[in-house]
Image (cartoon, rainbow, N blue to C red; front, side, top):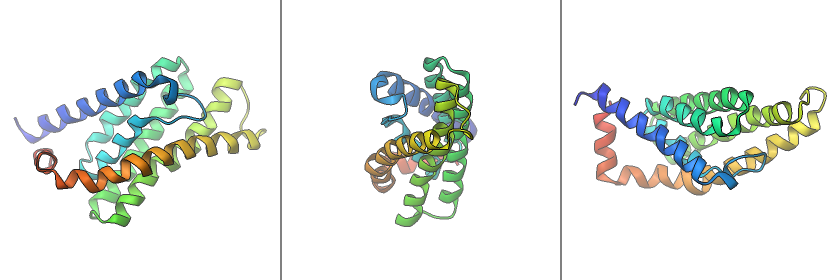
Length: 174
């Protein structure tokens, strides 16, 4: 199997895993105060940049469950942009500090984007007229995201490279 095919397969599996984890843990995966464990997969572009597309697709599929077009489009876009930034950080080297910065990308993008989507999409509020509501939603989303990324995502950035299967996977996807 050539590297591009391998990368496509890995990206598809990552997207499927993201969607399944999110939906399976639905009670904690949706809403302003969410603890989406699937977001820990957002560290993968740090090692395998091409997985950014799978994450965005998985997020889109998971967000279909909300039935809200704003959430589907903008939530998925936030994941894609965060994944691109995470990949860019990973291209510069893998240190403890760069891993921490990579983990903060999903926190930043989701806090701002999803924090803005929630009041608009679910309450019909113009976020510019209700900055307090936006700030509260952004803080709640960011807090949940930070919890996942720092408690699960960051340790994975340190543990996965120690595993032979993961190092082999990275090489196959280059």
